[in-house]
Amino acid sequence: MTIKLLIVDDSALVRKLLSEMLSKDREIEIVGTATDPYAARERIKQLNPDVITLDVEMPRMDGITFLENLMRLRPMPVVMVSSLTQKGADVTLRALELGAIDFVTKPKVDVAGSLADYAEELIAKVKMAAGARVNARVSSPKPAVSALHPEKRHSADAVLPATSGKRVLRTTDRIIAIGASTGGTEAIREVLEALPPDAPAVVISQHIPAAFSKPFAERMNRCSPMSVCEASDGQYILPGHVYIAPGDQHLLVERDGARYRCRLSSGPHVNRHRPSVDVMFRSVAQNVGPNAVGVILTGMGDDGARGLKEMLEAGAPTIAQDEATSVVWGMPGAAFKLGAAQHVLPLHRVAGEVLHLTADHPNGKLAHG
Image (cartoon, rainbow, N blue to C red; front, top):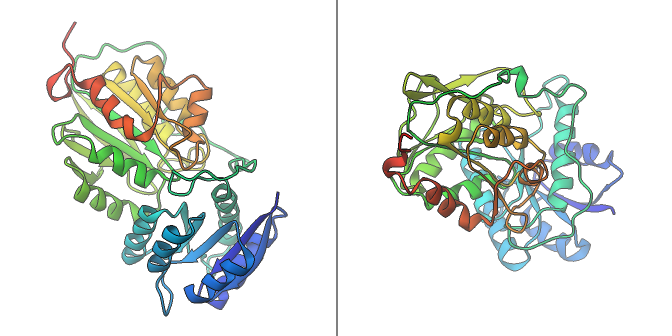
């Protein structure tokens, strides 16, 4: 099944680059381009595309205003094309709130060798968008889409070796570990909004570029009763606080006596990602064990599935978001198929289940026993 794509961008160079990259894939047909939202509106009526790539900043009407109108009048899969700036990050996160499926950054035409990798990412995200749920509520037909796998794909072993045998954990502090990718920024927001200010500490790995993670943490801090920050190396992990992995760094949980610290790593990409959910989950399995709760939310690919299984084997209860409420049921679906998820729940029930799993012990503490 061919995916009909409309490219909306005011830059002739960007329209040309995107068209050349995407037209190389036989499953994608560029049915048209538009220079601004007004032209895009007419093209949508004429061409009935399956997916749109949409520039964030355009003349006459900005991409956000257009997206808001589109999602109200004719919801459809949209992949945003964003600049790696503070403004670009803020606007892109707002676009994801409004229902955009995912985003790519502007292509770097001056960096040798970068366009091939960019094209691979762009093609994968357009194909994924064609089968995703718009706003996680409206179902679309799902073409067969497989995650990209480069020739050399690292596992979590590249950053943190696996260990055998159970550790005796003397600390009683609980930690909630959450991993997500496509659609995850909004899924995470819904979970954090429902957690009280004195909930156990939360560590999060969301696949996101380096320029976006701090604005994302700031946005979550404004809407969550808990205190949310971008994690820093060596930072103590405390109840009532949320620590989001910086883009382009792995977040690990490390024991420091009876306490926990954030440890950041610039080790190899794992499952094509840094931060990797598998890396974070493995560190939680090894250092927190049964005092943790693992949660895997919507996302493309399978990062986090094996790490969630390791958490389960270490005695931690585990949760996966269900297919019906996931924008893309790649990561949680892989965890389910691997037998890593004890509970498979719609998004609106995830926070409640996490609280249920920690409710017997005030301040997220387990009784010694």
